[in-house]
Length: 473
Image 1 (spheres, rainbow, N blue to C red):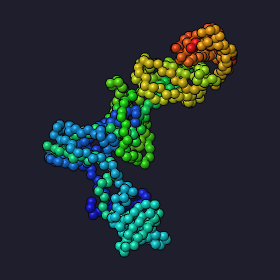
Image 2 (tube, rainbow, N blue to C red):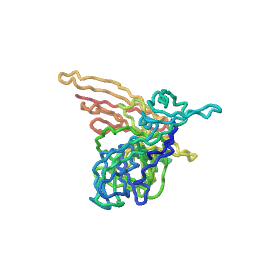
Image 3 (tube, rainbow, N blue to C red):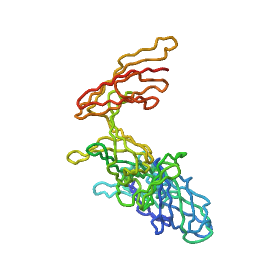
Image 4 (cartoon, one colour):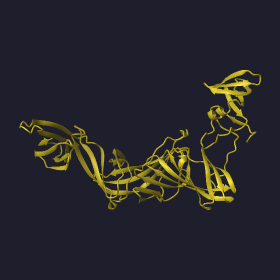
């Protein structure tokens, strides 16, 4: 629009006259989009659109791509006419229309400034050549050759005669394409984009006896890629996919509201192995808007999953606290049995009035079918610990000075009105050989660095574990 007048407010920038190129807009019938999101903040977008070509060389604008696109990843394919259309050159245009970009392009060009009035004064209009736009001022040279400095605060709006070349209203791929045929053809464009991520969140609701829970999972997709994906086929990939990350051409963050939606509709995710990863496909199309956090039910809630409550004291981690843990197995007979992506598990329990109360949370790693999971949700309030080294001796025999004998005690006080069993894990340095000489309670060698003692404590009672150990190095 060479002769149209573009008017914008200096702060709000509502452009009132502009003709956009809608020739390949993705809302057209027959177009589709699929998005595969990885849990490392990037995704693969596959768009199919009907595109119009003339025989010979064409300049094609592919609009509404993600602003966080990696332009080097773009792949083009003609589906309806394979091999008949080829891309010779590609440009990624991301210099978007905005107040600063328009003013920068209009340096040394004529502009019309509408200055605010006060009271009965309707204001004035000033025309001139824009010399600079900085320090919250516009500097103009008017028709009389006078230099005027006009502050942004006093400006009502600015008018420009045309849209400068090189500015676009949305990120756009511009191709030079060579076509052997003319007409509308169905094409697929594939590219990767950053700033789209997903994670898994789980909820475990304990029963009254604290020996089972109902387990459910949700997927949270966070899209800040700079594009919306309408009625998209959504796939998620869980796993540690290696990428070579390079600096994007320029940061492009839209300052928009963050919307959060929650979907709970039939046709959920289907899980299957995919190479060395796991792939989750949503069984229905769904829209992911830009700057939106979307939650979708991930797994059908599993009821009465058997769980074992464990009290554990580890001297090397926390000298005063007993950890509360729950262990369970990811098995099909318990309503689970699918690969669980890494994520946060929040644990709740119903109060006597029926309300759910939060009792702790932990994070799980990628967990395959049939593996065991352990949730550390907090520390016991009514079980306290006192750890002591009662005696210590270094060997004095010649040639055996690199050994130490110690006598230790762990006093466990149970102030609950029920009996408890506490596991006490004593950790040893990996470079020593150790041996438990004697103990007041049963113990096993859990691994090369851990001795595990089992201490049963009656209700409102105290139990003291005493043992001696010899370490050599």
